[in-house]
Length: 94
Image 1 (tube, rainbow, N blue to C red):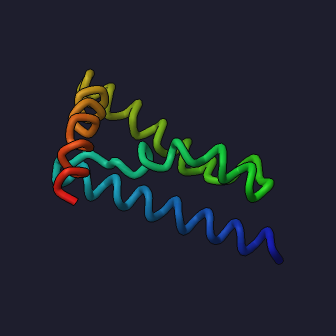
Image 2 (spheres, helix red, strand yellow):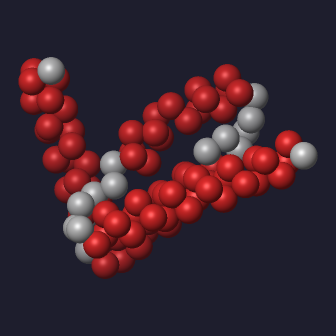
């Protein structure tokens, strides 16, 4: 029963990620969520004692980045650099 619930949750989260990626591609905006989640994944896996926690999100993010890079080489690096530069400005504004 628990596996069925986890499978439904994974399918739902996967569908949401795909929907967000499609929407972001349609409006030509980057999807920062996987980049923002990436640093906390190891800690979350350790805390929840689940080696596969958010593995589907990681795989979807890797596929998305590979797809974007195949169509627009260098765009992921440019997006990350832009986000890195914006962090201090956002911190000052808050």
